[in-house]
Amino acid sequence: MSEDSFSIWYWHWHPDLYSGVALLLGTYLILVGPLREKITARDNIPTKRHVICFTFGCMLMLFALAGPVHELAEGYFFGAHMLQHILITLIVPPLLLLGTPGWLISPVLKYRYNMSMAKFLTHPIIAFISFNIVFDIWHFPSLYDGALKIHFVHILEHIFFMVTAVIMWWPILSPVPELPRLSYQLQMLYLILISLVQTPLFAVITFSNIAIYGFYENTPKLWGITHLADQQIGGIIMKLSWLIIFVPAIGVVFYKWYQQEESKDT
Picture 1 (cartoon, rainbow, N blue to C red):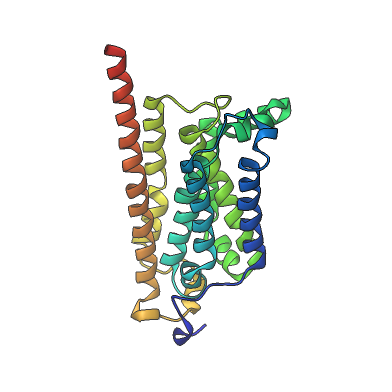
Picture 2 (cartoon, rainbow, N blue to C red):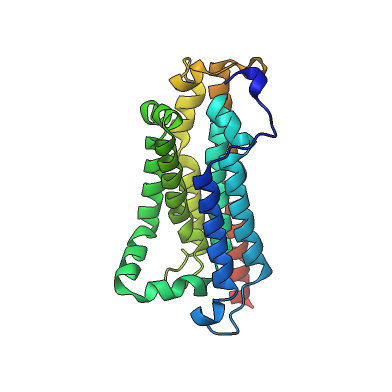
């Protein structure tokens, strides 16, 4: 891929991605629409917030994995690839959870095996460990470069990221009482730990004096940015994204905790 071939208007045509997102969003709209009364009580109506969040989450997923960010990530910049990973792990999953009414999931949890598996996977310790291990392992140079060279492996990487990210966010944004959210105090601790645990990966990427990922050494130097500078930019994007997302999230949880304590005193 040459420097002259890049266009910010270019969208990749991945039939598997488009059909997958269409199936996800279409199934959601059918379940909260025409089939809703077969799933839950008639008065359980999805709010506009539910539909907007879920739809926007699906559209953002499509943008991250097929739009200009994907073009830059696959052909030019490690930094763009890091931004892509941030979008599909720290922004898309919370939107999907915020867009999912609890009554849409509760029927699935009536089965003992499903409930046991869901309790295990969404346990805060399991959720925390699984996401961070997956995120770190896929950033090993051999796996990272392999995913960029082999399309199926790249799909697998993104599936692992998004599934474990949904699990990671669950203790904070669970939509069902059967799998309750953490208390506000524990939510803050959980978010603080998540915001800190990736610091070693950030440090290695940002402060290395050599380019770690060989794939990008063979890509064009778009806009005169060197491969090492691109890697450092990617590390900074990672750390800033973590701060931009988790610091406000901690603030929101703290405010809710404060309100809860105030209501107890009145």
